[in-house]
Length: 283
Image (cartoon, rainbow, N blue to C red):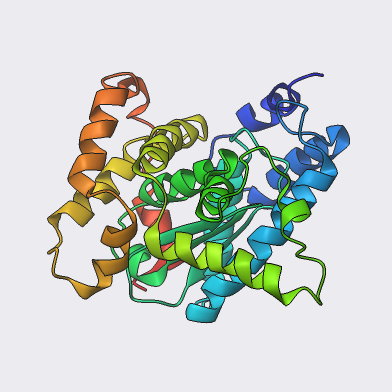
């Protein structure tokens, strides 16, 4: 089956990531995706994506129960526009991606299965450009593409990696509270413990590539990591980030080893500080 990335390549290359007509470009690309109805490998079925989405929705509800969405329509719309553009350059553009800003002063970002991605108001406040936002969102998109969270829940609950989640956890069976609680217990465990370090390093590597594909300076994510590295480890807003992610200096070192100078040719791509400040301001 023709690779879906090839199907929409012309659309994606027809305008840079900072093109003015966000909406029209998204609509055309999404129409192309829906026409073919498969992922980049042509292997993911509609049913399996629906199952993943069901799990991700419950996961997102858990996050939103802890921190609501920030009441800032302009910022929410802007983060969705940037996120959707990045997702269209990932290996799973067909997912019904949704992006949001959580009204929390804590510095963090989250993703859930099926395409839900969140960044906190506290992390936005420490960013300086759209390329930095793109780097963070692309990192989270990579987690979804690689299904890191699903694998973490399976491991946390002692499930077979090849098993179908809905066969083992009857999510849609409203009367089966025991299995629902077990699933949510696995979700909360992963939220509190975080993903494996290897998953985080992989998401960093994939994230800078996705950002570069989308037309951004790929060094946006390393810039955010440098900002976090410079913050005091005693800062209470960083406690969850540091508890669930490798230290920023370790991530920077791993990225430097994997990237080398391979992406230097893309470093001249835009950072878009002015558009970021206009759209987000100071959260």
